[in-house]
Image 1 (cartoon, rainbow, N blue to C red):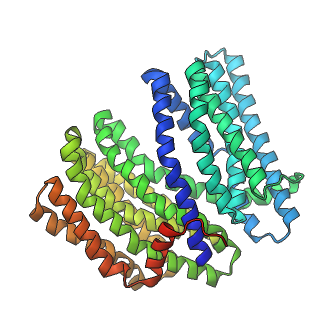
Image 2 (image 1 turned 45 degrees about the vertical axis):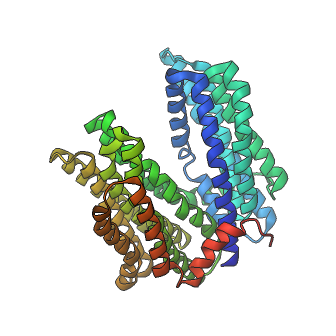
Length: 466
């Protein structure tokens, strides 16, 4: 468990350092492009996000197969095969698009920028393959340093290219950042591209495609509620609702980083050892996450009322989504465990049912006039259903599942009782949030030595050598 804590700390530190640098880059891009061109660049970025699922699972196959390989030559050969297969697949997609547009005579605005987007699509996927290879070989420090490097070099490249070349420069900037990151991974990590072998493509697809479908289902479950809000309630309500989604992204980072480190270990270990990793991780997460959730539940509404008065309608749905994200976080770790033990079909089935529940409840809530509050309730309910089903699929012990829910239930009860008593003042809510963190830590975290060790490791010794 010590190496898990160390790698979790290193990766977390890399992400935390890159976030403020990313905000600076985003500010510069919006400044140089202006609202109209930045909107187009945002659409390009959305396309690139979805294009990560076009590889039919090759990148996930690398992450699934390589942890079990003992021969270094086999590992590099699998990486070379996946890069070759991905490049060929994406080039076919690009060629098909170009041929269709030529035959139909369809006019494309920003044609040069779009061709660059296709180039970015290919190199982005190669970068994902490289990152998954390093993840599979547990070279987390190289991944963390490459993440920081990408955030650092992005700023001068934005100034150099976007300021002079506008939209095409913004897309070219993405290409340069990915290219530099790949070059760094090859020099700093044990990253080599072996000679491709076509017979390796089939097992990569077979192992990776179910994981891809599971990742896509989880992605849709986290984002489809926004599509429903935008479609039925309009962009203004979507703006209110999106506040909660932005908060979710920061909280979900914790289980995602933990799962990022755990997955390759659980894949290469025996089922009993993987189960022990899962049980330990889910126990710690169920105790740590409510501390952040309760703190934000108390403090954020007061900050919104003080500094963002136009977003007051976002407070109630945000509170609901804060509770819901606890269950979504547990679902992430449970999903990684089921993937590690080859239970992807069971995982995909539960995710699909959860998706259907969320969509159905959201539409019913809107038709009954409950608006974004109803949609938030639908999302939180689907997260609760998914977490419960996935935890039962992992352990098949209802008492253990209920035990994991005690910390969040205690947090919710504390907030619902004391928040109305204290009122909505900023100072009083700051004091209450500090009091909550103190009381919660004494009740759930301090008594758990392993949980406390995990937090201290993440804060004090993220770069301690092996």
